[in-house]
Length: 167
Image (cartoon, rainbow, N blue to C red; front, side, top):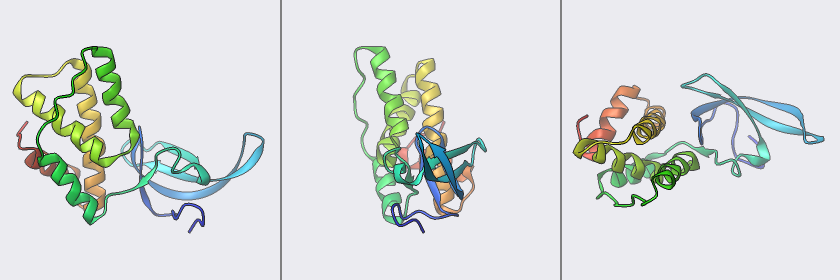
């Protein structure tokens, strides 16, 4: 186990902007004029490989997957009331949604999925919002799937059930 980060080969992690991955290996690479020990993370959905310096895991927003307590908190967020937070500037609204999706916070991601899914169910979304909803829902469902050891389609259904919509 890495002394600095608490991560080790075989751990599943959430990497912002990419989704759920598994630490496959450690590797020393030459970066910014010195050798750095990196985690080699394979993203499950895209099969992409990301090399992250061990010292930068937290700085880059990588985090452990949901555990039992955090999963319960997530389901509470999904079932909670919708926040009305649409900015008057549409570009800023979409940039704000994208920032939340890429922050790595599972509870903020859950709130974003909840709000967008309910808006889609009640009246519709713009093309950009629909694209962001799909990305956020896939990240969240992949994390729930891996955390609970269930198929991703079952995780999608649990998310929709807690939000209270059937799309």
